Length: 369
Image 1: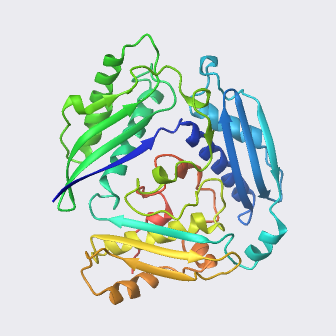
Image 2: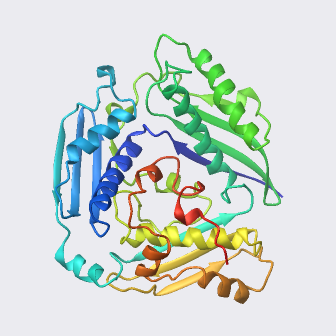
Image 3: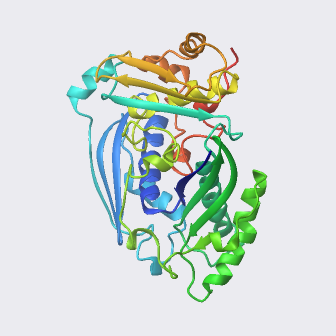
């Protein structure tokens, strides 16, 4: 049976990702000062303006404006023509965490209620669905072309979309690729497209031994013109790219975003724990696809529910797989924090090109059990 599946990703300079990275830079700074800091920070960016709001409990004062400016500058927003730069005005509305929430978290309980999902598949070396992996790698390479000066006419911001054809559940070819990126108007669209195919699309597909689609199926800047990207053309907010952050809609999502939250928030740490277990089930050869799901209640240490679905691809009885899985990691909130060593400044890097599928993160390691 033939089916298709499409996923998208966005560049590091996309407005929503600017916000995610600013918020996670605050998380990192607070954890650097004190591993038990509490953070729940949202950022908004728009034309020539940055707004930060939320709750931070930390023993030392944090220079929020300095952190935000450093992120924006590193992403290439340095020219006034963008109508948004690291010099743009910043408003900060951040206070301490609610004592009612803190009371539950202080005892090792979850910082909120909710459902979290983790997914893994054997279809790529990253144990991720192929469409989202390709979408991430395309925008990552596109960003690199601008940052290294190989395509100096590119400007911050950008998106990708990849449509993959599956036969009997296995990916067989890339049917369509969509790329969008703002660029210097002196460079014609067809020149930019040719360079992107040469320096971005072809190298990424070669990494996965995939053929280049027909060039008519490589779509660049669908409206025909994109000169100014970023917050001046599209307001950004923390937490709006939860599908980009996870599995590209290939698997379920509990609904809570990750960025801007310290790891006592199970929206974040619970999803990381589920991914860790799902990936290890696939890496151990116990199934071809796996979804792990949990649910928590605010103030309670243990999940109120946990389950595993291998979609009929299991190689051993489910009871053997669940026995293996639940011994991989203690799914209490303190157990996740300690087992994955999450109380440390590792989060800004998660806020671009997805939270899963890169070995540098602790929830991506293969267990030695």
